Length: 589
Image (cartoon, rainbow, N blue to C red; front, side, top):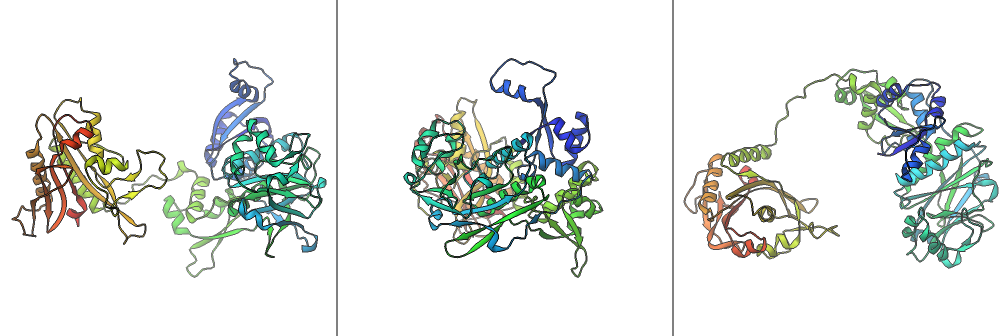
């Protein structure tokens, strides 16, 4: 989870109270976050440079606070303070307002159609009359960095640009041009670069070089201009120096270019809601109209409240206590009102734009539990659940095989293509195995269709173990099935192997008989479908003439026999082995 570093003294001053470390840890725990570390800024620098520890009395204490990964509003001091002040009852939930500006007076961002080739979306907003000091300015920049690392996925999904509005002139255009047509002075530089030259220049920059891959291979680069053709930014790489913000900036223009519009809206909302507190008109944000080439337009930001109806019985039933839900939700920045539905047993929860993590009734229930206190929730024993029949028979067979002296193993459900086929002398019929697209490793190319490769690999890696080796596995395999929504299905299989000085074929045969006896199936003559019988088979992974199919009520459910010596050589097993594998689901059904 992300960690937010804030100065202890600034944090306590904003909260309006000084806490001991123990008291603040308890407050964090109650709110669902954690004080991860207590350090100083100089200590952090010394640690990064591997210098010896020194202590100075005047060093500012830094609190490193771990917050949930989906709570983007807690990634800065402003959001953290606001949430905690509301939680402890000092402040009311703020109401965010989009300024009412006539369309003809509204700032406009015109989007050219070529942007669809690289980063098709852009959202914008303005913070008017903002007042920065050094602490606020640093927090503003830090929030952008944390959002870039978190929801923006290192700028691949969203890139944030912030500009001094007084240095640029609307209307703005968002374009995608060949890199040789883009020239501007980038942030913290004094000379102009062509965009393709800039890519080469930043390959030696420790911070920016990791973002170059996002656009450098594209024939066009995204770029934002004002009406004077001044470059605001080359997203997602760098802003222009001309519109750089400073401590003297009073009006901030924020633009977010993206490949994911939903995340772009969340990022923009987070930026403006966290820092509109410093505007002349507190919690007011000026909108910007984004106009597309097809004539369609949208106004951002969208700070509307999202309503969610939640049954009270779901909340109280899940937590296990009768609670005053409305007051608890207020502590978590959520307003709740009684629903006007016919049953009257639901509440309508109003979710502010800062709480993009609230998507479902379970999120509301979790916030109620946090506000109430997890330690206060009464301990209860859950009602008995009826076990799944397949799991019951699986556990029964595990116990029975273990009582016969076999040791259970657990192997990977993914394996290489050759392990599943050629190493077992099998051929791929192209209609059974589930193939993994673009596998990360050649060891995990397909979903196994048999437990045999994993068990043979286990023996091969433990061939020096004292003999005999008696192991078994109960696990799932996957096979293609067009009747299923996903095109494949899982099957529960059982497999056992004996490896010793002799093949142990009779022991595996006896194990098959015992398994059938446990499930209550009698041995019957060939052709009788009232029980099970064995029939000669011809599988390439087994020794010819020393193998048999298991027929249960007329259906083939498995095979056992002596493993083919060719297969044993491939798996580097020097001793003879016998093996059985059968489909448990066929027994259960």
